[in-house]
Length: 284
Image 1 (cartoon, helix red, strand yellow):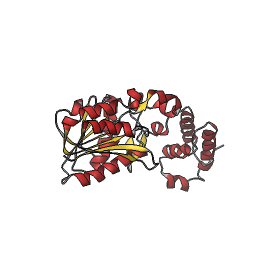
Image 2: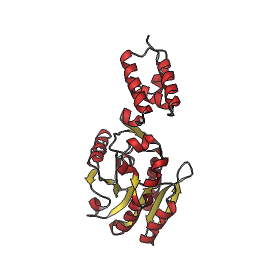
Image 3: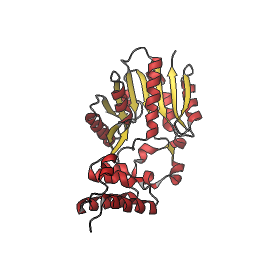
């Protein structure tokens, strides 16, 4: 017997919730199977779902119950109003990172008199930060780096899809960008301590790339290295913006205060009131 779309959705939401997953994932996966958006889905609730579509939908729901993130099943995630392709070579872009973009653009407008600026995004992953900055501030000359060849392939694909012109270079931290000076450096590096793995969702730990999640020295090593390596690479005025773990604000800010004693270093909270960004503004 054929199910209606409404019945399929009800079944899947209950099945997910019974297995400790969020019921809302059913809607996202069904939209993907039917190649429609939310309003399209609502208009079709009384239509029948074909046997083939139901089979595909069931397979997706079972994969998510086992822990595979919805975004890796659908292959996409929205970030700053744009669609990015994601696969298991890259971290799934998070809404909190959109706030790094907002904070950066505000500070660019305050710090610099012109828009023809150079920006480096270190550890670009899917390219979400670098590509969004290029789309929002087209005059920026942007270079994005990553250690992972596979991640850079995904980022390049996203840049092509979204018609953003930027340069991608493979390499570790500041090594690929050390040949010149920069006006702006952004990074959302791996910042989770290995000790925290036990308390994290299996959806994240088992499927997202560990090299993009975890870091040594309680998750702080890459901030310490960036603070040490960036001083000779920054122009004046200059801006450094970093996403951090919510317990790391003071420590990361102190790394930058130590290496940029003249700069104004601030810890900024996200929409949930958690420390989420550190900005270092170099004015002298």
